[in-house]
Length: 264
Image (tube, rainbow, N blue to C red; front, side, top):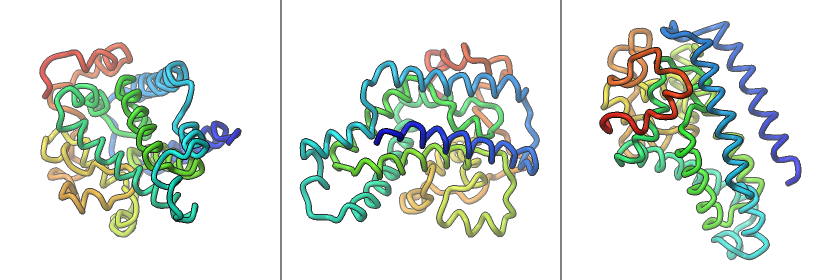
């Protein structure tokens, strides 16, 4: 798929602009830290991660899908399941895999050290959705490529999944107001900003909940769903109890967080 990069970039910048305007027009919470500092740092880590992935991996997940199809690797390249059905199953399975990976990065100490950089942001908005440590991004790519190969996922389904994952990450991290009645219906089918914001609470029980990025069903199915934060969305804090210094929102501090202090 020669234009897959253009498609992903087009959706990324389009969704980014829509969510940025939504945050300006109807913010959900007052921000507590310098937005220019946070945006510069969060967007810098986004571009750094993109560069490193391209540098380290000559092939991406969609390329693994093409190779798997050519060589007959994976479940759906060796069954008679129609391609459309196989693709839909793969998108749902990949979403479950990302949910499971997210749980693992919270509950396993060394992985949490990496993932806590994402949670150390003192505010939450659309840029938080791409604030991940480079080592976590590399591990995540390896996991995703392995799952694509095992499934024998159609290439178009991998592209659809990646567009959905990037788009919903910006959407559900957005500091965007949605009327409660609309949110209560929408979160039956999609992880909403109010649903995911609970996950960025410094209260450990709430931090270890609402792991979903796209489909909201896994949290309900596996008992990790919390409907609302204990302090309410307006009054809740964002971040981690042990990382409250605004001076540490800069890129160098973000990169060394996994190597500082205790696991929790």
